[in-house]
Length: 442
Image 1 (cartoon, helix red, strand yellow):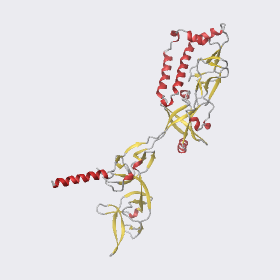
Image 2 (cartoon, rainbow, N blue to C red):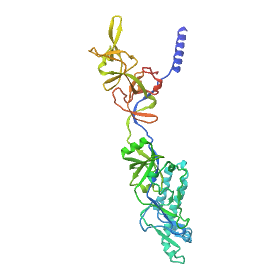
Image 3 (tube, rainbow, N blue to C red):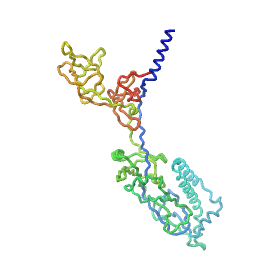
Image 4 (cartoon, helix red, strand yellow):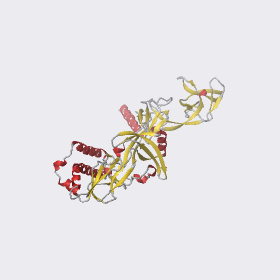
């Protein structure tokens, strides 16, 4: 009973010590890269021109939005009497049935909307509604083009104006007051989507002479402007060109970089000479900058610590002791006179002909001797290293690291360095709770 009682007391003491003492939590070092936030919402800058209506009446469109028109192509008609609306409303539904090509166009438009829709931007639903209505009406209007000549030669002659394109470009049926905005004029207020107002130009609506009839984008050269930090601006300028992924359809293109700076901030302009037609109806475009990522050993920032060491010339470090470990010969004063003793101290780094040695075994003012010489060196110079605590051997052992890249949570450090880390090493997750040579608790 006494023996079992002692064992019980011992177990209780061990359990209490386990739960009351701090524990070193390990983290396995692996190769990886950082996930850097390179997603931006940009403003599309295009060479756009608003074309005013040449007459008053009901406007009907025949050119498809996001489609290219040449000079002289029919874009819209202005019907002073509403005869075309009557023709569309009174026609046989079977005559206005959509072809396979028309249905595919509608399916593509619906799929594009559903793949990018976010409840945070519910107003996009209304833009989509007007877009689909306009597409359907334009498809229906194209069925009665053959009857317009007959309408104009009847008693209603001259009451339907056929309006044709005067310039070549991409047709857009909306306005938003950003048409004249240039890249160097962009401010932070322009990115406020809560105040942004896109006005659709609706088919079969009543318009007055001089009202916007349609918008035409005249050039395939366009750009996207994004706000950037000074650091990112410097990186982009150095790169000159950057690979850009458009999140709407996951396509990738290269953009030429230009930086604009004003009192409101710094903005990067990414210039393109293609893909404009794909995004001609979008003013705000979500993009991701695809930059070269540094790869190496990925470690949490909580594991990183900075420590001080003594700096000693490499000539003063030798090997000794029973294990042949690295150390120095320290001068010791005794009753019998001056003698030397070997002090084992690990080497943590080498730089400019000096070793970084542990400061726990040496003291400021100690003199160390150069092997096979009478030269002495006073311990005084210090240096700092950034590193982590390696716990492969069951105790905390400082290892130097070289940070290549970092974010708020993780750092990428150089692999394969002398006195550094290797892949699959275990390190202390929280360096603030660890001291050199602390034992880990299993």
